[in-house]
Length: 346
Image (cartoon, rainbow, N blue to C red; front, side):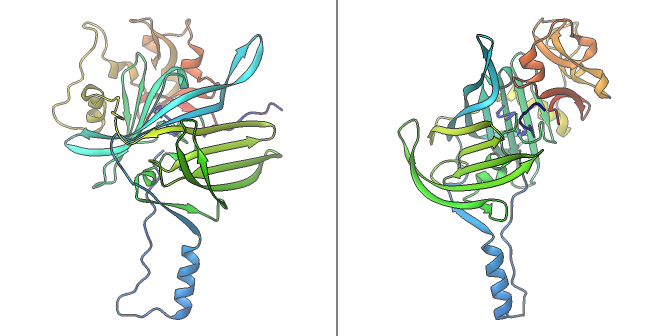
C-alpha cells in the first residue's frame, strides 16, 4: 500500500489558496450561562466551570492590518534529485489584510507562495458586520477567482484549518482540550533570532492501521497565533514552522481589478465583465461550467500559458503537471458554483 498524506486549504496563501489553505471556521462565541431573574446554584456553577476547562485560552494581539508571518514548509510535495525523491522545503508568506469589497471592509488572511501549487496567492476574508466570508485565489497568468464557498477543503495542500480561520483574528484563541492535549509552555528562538513563548499541544490517532501524531505550537506574541504544525503518519512526516514575523509592511497583493471577481458573485451594480483580448471570450466565459466534464487543465489556447477552465478554451495536449495537479499530485479541476476550480483529491 502506498503511503501518502491525506490532503484535506485551506482551503486556499495560496494564499494561502492555502482554503483551505490553508479555511474560515465560524467564530466560537463565548457562552453566556446567566438566566435573567434566576440565581445559579452551586451545582450549575460547577458545571459551567467544567465546560470552561474544556478549552485552553491564549490571549493575543487580535487583528492588526499589515502584520506578516513567514513560514517554512517541509514535506508538502517532493523533489526529484538524481532519480531520488526528497521532501520539498520552501517558504510561504502570510499577511493580515483588509480589502474594500462592495463598499464594505473584509478582513482576513492572505497566503503568498511562489513554490506552492506552481505559484499562487490565496486569501480568506470576512465581513464582521454580516459574517459573510469570501475566498479569493490568484494563480500566475490566470484571472482571479472569488467564491463564497471554500476554494479548497482544509485551505491548501493539507495545511491545518486551526492555523487559518477567522478565530485567528480575535484577541483570544480557544483550543479545544477534548481534541488536543496540552503539553506545556516553553520559550523558543525562531530562525530569525526572535524569542517567543509558545503553548504546545499534541494528539495521536490511527488511520488505515498507521499511527498519526500531530503537534501544534501556538503563541499570543505573534499574529494569528500559529507557530508550528507537525504531522507524522507512519514513517512519513511534514511540518510548517514560523521563521519570522513583523508588525507592519504586509500589504495585500490583491488589487481593485482582482476584487471585481468578488463584485460579480455578490451581484454588485456597475460590474461589466470585459474581455482581456478583444475578439476573444472573456475570462468569465472561459471559466464557466455546468458539470465537471466541462473542465480541463493544460494551456490556454489564446496565450499558451498554463491554465484551467472550460475545455473549449484549453489545449490538453500540453500539460503543466505542478500547475494542474499540484506539486504532490493532490489536485483535480472540478466545476464549483459554475466555475472550473482546483479542488483536492480525497
